[in-house]
Image (cartoon, rainbow, N blue to C red; front, side, top):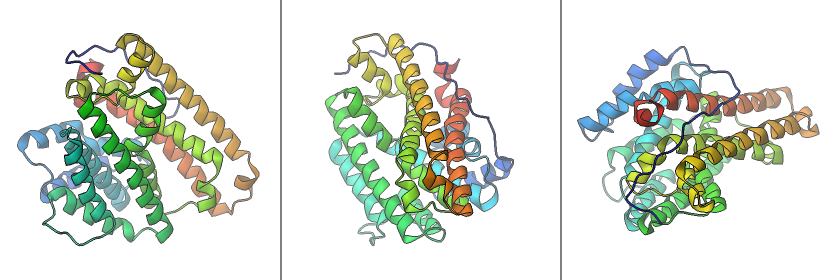
Amino acid sequence: MTSSARPSTGPIRVTIPYASRTSADVARSRLRHHAWVAQRGLWPDSRTEQAYRAADFPLFVARTHPWAEGDDLDLATDLVGWSWLWDDSLDKQASPVWAADALDAYRSVLYDHPPQTPDTPLLAAWRQLLARLEHRTTADWRRRHEAHWEATFKSFLQEAHNNAGKIVPEFDTYVAMRRNAGGMDICLDWVEAVGRYELPLHVHAMPELISMRQAEQDVVAMTNDLFSAGKEWAVGNTDNIIPVLAQEKNCSWQDATRLAHECISMALRNFHDAENRFLSSRPYRELPRADRENSDHFIEAMKLWMRGSLDWHLTCPRYREVTS
C-alpha cells in the first residue's frame, strides 16, 4: 500500500561501462522535431511545450541512437518523442476504465482500423508514424511490433489497476510488468526500422539474444526508476523499483536505492555473459555476413541505449531534484 508521504532516495551512482556518444545531426534534428510536434498539435498547452523543450528529448534520441542521421534520426526522434508524450498522457490518469478505453483507441490505430471518432493529435500522429514505419518494414516485423505493443498495453492496464488500488507489486511481478510497460521491445523494433534492417526470426529467438534484451530492458527501466521514484510516488504511481524493493525487503527507500543499484549491476553482468555466449555460438558464427553485421549493430544499439539513457537522465531538468 502507498501513503501520501514522499520518502527520499539515496544517491544515484549508476555506472554503464559503454562509450558515450551523440549523433552529430542532433541540432538539425531538434529544430525539425520541435516543428513536427507543434505542427501535429502534440503540445496541449504552453506548460507542456516548455517542459518538453527543456527535457530535450531529441538529445535523448541522439544519445541512444548516435549512429543515426538525416531521415533515420528524424524517424527515431519522432517515434521516441511521441512515445514520451503518450506515456505522460496515460500517467496522468489513474482510472483503469479510462486507461482501457484509451489503450483500445491506440490498439485500433495499430491495426489500421478506421476511426469511429475524430483522432486526437496523439492518435493522428501515431497513425502517421505507423505509415512511415510500414515503408521500411516487412510483414514479419509488423507482426512482432504488434505483439510487443499488445504486451505493453496489457502491462499499462495492470499498472493502472495497481495505481488505482495503491498496490505495490512483488518484485518478480514488477520485473515482468516493467519490461513490457517500459516499451524497450518496441524501441528495439524501431532500432531495426531506423537502421533499415531486420534480424532473421531465428536470431530473435536465440536464448542468448533474448537474455541480452531482458537485461538491457532491466538496466534502462531500473535506471529510469531511480531518477523518477519520488516524482512518480507523489502522483500515485506504484510500479517503481524503489517502493517495490522497500516493501519486499521491509527497508527504507535509501536502502532500496542501494539494492536497486545492485540489481542494475547484476543486469549488466547478465548482458555481458549473454553477449559472450551469443558471439561464441555456432548459430551466430554461421550467419551470412550481412545478418552477422546486423546482429553486431543490434547488440551495439542495446549498449548505446543503456549508456545514452543514463547520460540524458543525469542532465535532464525533468529529474533535476535527484541529480542536484
